[in-house]
Image 1 (spheres, rainbow, N blue to C red):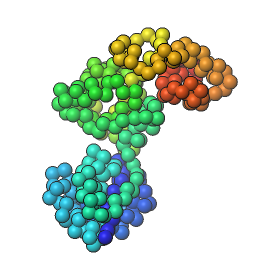
Image 2 (cartoon, helix red, strand yellow; image 1 turned 30 degrees about the vertical axis):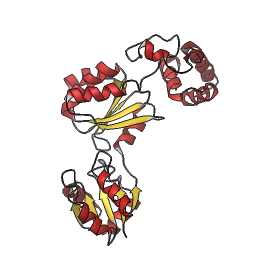
Image 3 (cartoon, one colour; image 1 turned 90 degrees about the vertical axis):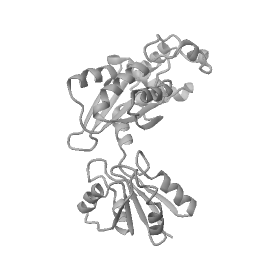
Length: 300
């Protein structure tokens, strides 16, 4: 029996293909590709002559038998147009059928737009949620954002350029004027990161037409400690009161004072936040937000 390999492909720069991925693509008996034309450009770049089969959103169920037949005689590599199969791309049904049939399913990691955007965003990468592409219709998009409004985790999503302003407007209305990083055309020659507030992004893109493929990384809700003044992203009083053991949490001013002391000892923002989080049993990301909030007083 063959193995189904889930091969991550470049998201823009064709050099972002691992040595293991190259070997698997060369040695597989068949490549199941979301778009054979797109994949062929990658195969031509590396002189790979493995035959390919079209496997996309509209024919994925019809092609299951052909892929299973190929697996009975050798290995199959599943690839998306860019990035990782089954991550906002076809693959979920095939993977589950292969597991049920007893075939080995093996990931071959590589380039990932959510991870690339997250680690370069300047926002917390400790805990995060990727929601994939935002719904194209406004009502559905707003309904989804409402379910995420209170999450303290960093949010990652994809949006089409022609819908970006509508999406940003909904983000501002529902999440408040949080920090956001908009990554455009990741790993491509014209790669760009905009790191600012949602309101600033709206103002910018009202004058500059959005282009390219966009990945949005949005700050999670920064739940206030007692004594902190509420703002646009602060939860309602009833929700805030429901936080566990809130009365035992230190005030933000106390945390800021501790951070200043650690800064004077030569600690970096990350190290100081990690130390306080460990000592007080708090979330490191929230403490680091206070470090950032000191603006020019504390420098990394």
